[in-house]
Image 1 (cartoon, rainbow, N blue to C red):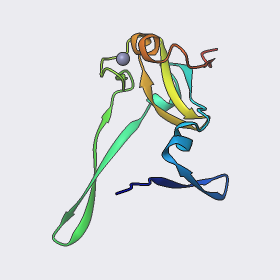
Image 2: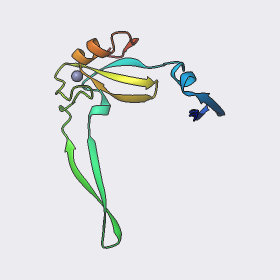
Image 3: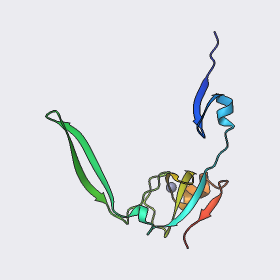
Length: 117
Ligand SMILES: [Zn+2]
């Protein structure tokens, strides 16, 4: 019995059919972007909770996350440094925050863009 795995992706508007090996060889554009903890992305972070009640969708705002609370998406620790690392999959595609320790441990080979000035 043969198993052939193909991945169909849309890349730059074109449909591409790739084997799994080809997908792994795809270019990696990830990088670490360093931002100040006062970056606007960390302020006024509200969350909403939507659920069904009596056949209707209800959306409630839940308590906002304090601006000073920034957790590392790598180790879940509270980031208290003035500089926060964002692991970026592409220029406008942040994956998550990374503390200094996680950046050094897991992303030392990844290019760094410093936007703290
Ligand atoms: Zn961490």
